[in-house]
Image (cartoon, rainbow, N blue to C red; front, side, top):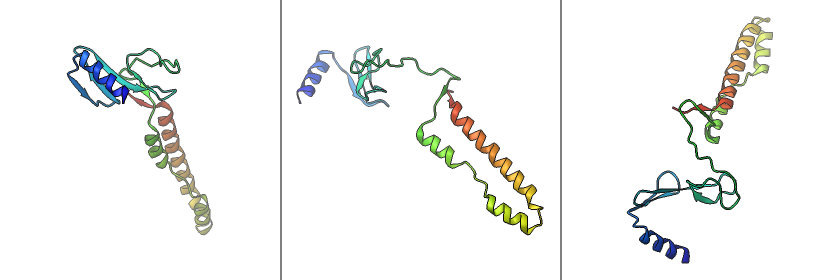
Length: 134
């Protein structure tokens, strides 16, 4: 409660015109200054976006935004979706079909296995490289 009282007094002294969320935890717009609150990637405490390091743990804050063409990692959810698209080859089914067709199915088995392997390799390299900033 004391924290909120001090915060409101601070805001009144600085002539705050607007207080609203903006993709981060919140943005306080002063006359000509914007203070963004972000989470420290090490200790997860809220810190100012303009800070060069976290006052709690001392971890450096990356102040540079990714430039056009830079690679940024995919989120865990995007990686999970990509991994769910990987294909598996049912070798037992292909072996049975090869026996039933007197070996002719081996060609199809080889093509399917190669195709799945190439597709899975593309997915793995896409996850490793990350996505490009547009």
